[in-house]
Image (cartoon, rainbow, N blue to C red; front, side):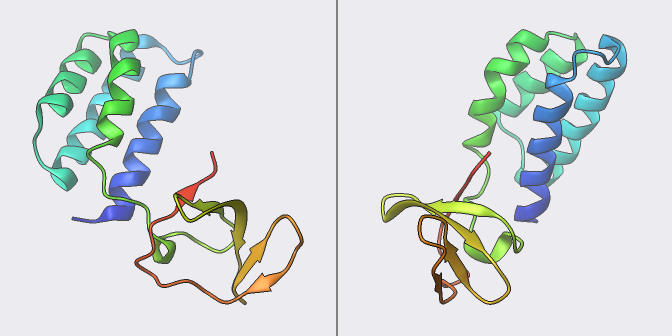
Length: 127
């Protein structure tokens, strides 16, 4: 499974779902294709099947309610998978915002540079 691709597909689904100006038929087709690509990455699930059906029939309110449930099926975001410049926190460890840089991690509160974390460390990215 390509973890980064799965997260990007989920983000693309959220983005298209929020696009009010897009024709509903086109929006449904785009989201349906993204969901099928996501199925290739994370496998089949009841939640994903419901999302596919909702997209096919342009039921965007239902799809909007299912997308947060879909996120629970995705692998956790790790420090190693985020690019430099990303603002994040360490859930349950450090709630202060941090920014990843090429030199290390910068604490946003005091702009102090600290070393890099382990690549497998689970992080929560800011939206």
